[in-house]
Length: 115
Length: 113
Image (cartoon, rainbow over all chains, first blue to last red; front, side, top):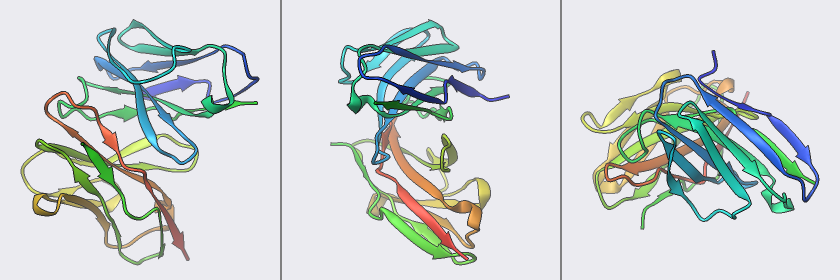
């Protein structure tokens, strides 16, 4: 069974559309994340939730809205998609918040292409 | 400021040759250090991590890394590279004060026959 699973894996959409990426972890972890990997493969954290509470919110446009219905799920909704949103989005989880020595486990990524 | 530098963007080695990927970090407190590998079209897989104790850490797939505090380095090594090791490798640093995990820019490894 996949520990951190996210869907869809590939998504091609037009500018201005709204799309969501779903993520689920079956590791029993308390903390979940969204990371963005740009075309130069640079990885940057976007959001982090611990027990459904938002604990990290980087400088991300308001068009990006995470939602955690329970601690096993963290979805990412993106409004009014722009060309610059094209990237790979990784969901991840850890036992506790990063920075406490917890190992982060990543999903396989969602390749978003905005045309 | 906290940062991670992987000086080599791309490295090519012959199959069977030894490998060393460099990672230098800047961190104000005791660092936790990680190496992840990303195969093409895949997510990141943890290779190994250092929290404390023995500075030579063994990981999966025959990789090891050595933490050198005096040099602020955490280089990844493998004695004999296999073609399946071709991938992108990321070094990351975090700490014990609630700080965020910071990734290096990655090193792409190519393996030639």
